[in-house]
Length: 297
Ligand code: FSX
Ligand code: SF4
Image (tube, rainbow, N blue to C red):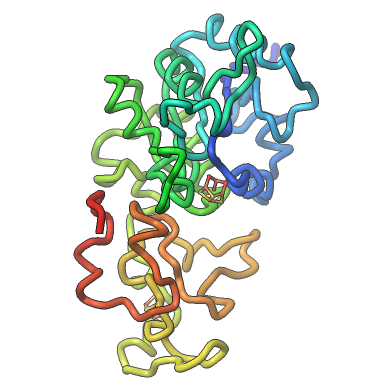
């Protein structure tokens, strides 16, 4: 019997104002391994055809920029654009970050996100910087960094956008989302929360599933790092943070932040890091209402 043809799913992955932690986290995917994701069929009959990714591709220079551009023309409306990092938008945006050149002049990240974002099938904002601004948009933000969603709103770009925050995001959140999109299509409005995060991964609070929750309920609080007990008094943001870390664990199930004695710092939330800071100070009632708000505090 003839083997069914594998469908190629082109992906362009660009990096803007990022520490590259999102790339590193995705490369650490354990199940499936990154080899399975990139070389094999990520789901039966479909292959992720990663056309551009500066950290892992062997090529460099004009040749890879041309390939990126050609892919976006050839596969118009069919490719997935992954944006990692926030987007510098000051008047001199290219001074804060560019991707390749045109006629000897650097092309700003904001121009690339706009051009490639318009013609994509869907855009994945990978990491808290791309999804909400994150560390790159933290005060004083001299580069005028904003999220992909805010840029799209400003420019009237209506390409479907999925936010996969986390600083960095868990590899499963990203690869699971890509696999689901290829399997059954883009998430519907009921499958994402008010911040565009898939409920499959961001549907519950850390605090709901935390193994230290019994200590919290009994009022047994750690007074210093390495104490047993709930980490609330050491600044844990688990009560306002939506992610499945306590169930999924990190590094292939080895451990996670609270498991290793660190309070949750709320890295998947809009407003991270400024509104979640100070990280090691008890969450107080007066900062609670501001969590997730886009207003300056
Ligand atoms: Fe870094 Fe990504 Fe944080 Fe930002 O992750 S891990 S600063 S979300 O853009 O590379
Ligand atoms: Fe909640 Fe954090 Fe305490 Fe866990 S350690 S029970 S998430 S406050």
